Length: 494
Image (cartoon, rainbow, N blue to C red; front, side, top):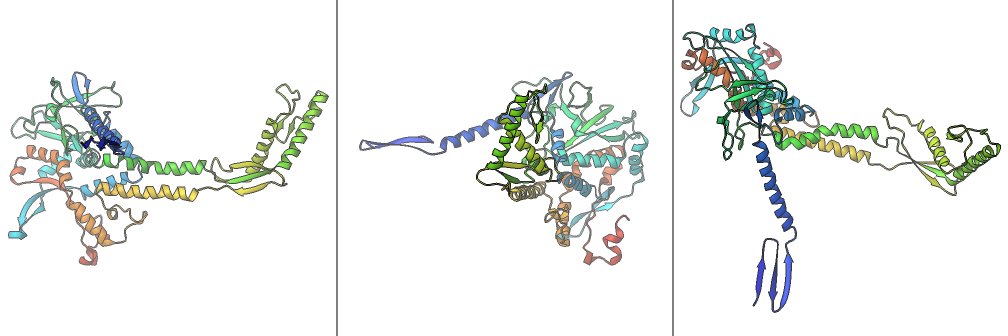
């Protein structure tokens, strides 16, 4: 009877008494890789759902295996030559020409119907916004700019509400001001007893703790988390607005950071590789060929001097071409082979004095001995300096491309194009900026969420009149569609 048996990676086949065994090459390693990925997935899940105890509160940690996610993002990003400026441009693009009050109206008919923002002048709301600084809080422009910075680094905006004492009295302004809180100091917390068979959720975290998480022994401030359903329940509260990350229940994570992290690290190392190579490579790459006749001659001279010194009992010559011929007490010593090594090193040091350069390790030599010919010989030492530099620079360029693509920003509007040359195509800049600006609605929603809440609480008529605060993001017209007087060079700053 013929028989065939197998599992995923091996088996045997029998036919007419013959036995053939087999295995599928690499199958075991593939299964191992798959299992390893699942193990990594579970390990990351456990890390991301770890908690710590602090002053009677349970604090979910923010980060994989640590509680320093904002700090990790900052340290990785700040070392990069490209990302800080890209993130700054995102802040500038969203902030535009500053915040303004607007209402929305509908224009057109049928398929041409669209909503349009119309600026609103409201003295009461603007007076309240301008009063923040006079009342001891930051200017509302600073508040908004800081929130945008945090949003583009950590996908969250953290705001502290400062209420007036008479916030529950009809007719008074309940919200005195808002202030920005940095995400690197903030963590969620709960004082609930969470069952061991249930994961901590966002709804459980009714507190926000502020402090220095790199120094857990420092003092921490504990605040109630702002509740939009009961906004005036506490004298002060902290709102944590976040652009939720898929699969993450509590903290948000940058969508671009994890995928680009290794590219960012590699890009950060590029200047170190180049500088290290310039400091330590064989800049003066010379191979020195020492004739054997010279070696034998110098060896004979040293042997004779040492013999005479030993016979006389005193050292008539204490040094010969950098070679010390006495001991620490000044007594003559016998010749030994190590003296020739000292003499050769001395001669090479004299040669390297002619090899000048700025680097610390300029003037390196490689020496060998040649027999049968007189005269020292110097040859270039083979090296792959050009290939090394080209490989490092090529990787650096590719990393820049990947980072820009991962951030979703076209190079033409970040001023990074063709090896650092500004894009010369005005249409590229215009249409890419147009696409990018139209996608800023979500970011604006998260950044302005709390300030628009406060406007509604303080000025109920703003709800009826649909007054909101947003950012004035002007789309520039094409040069050919504007008169000379209205072109950018004539209107910037007006």
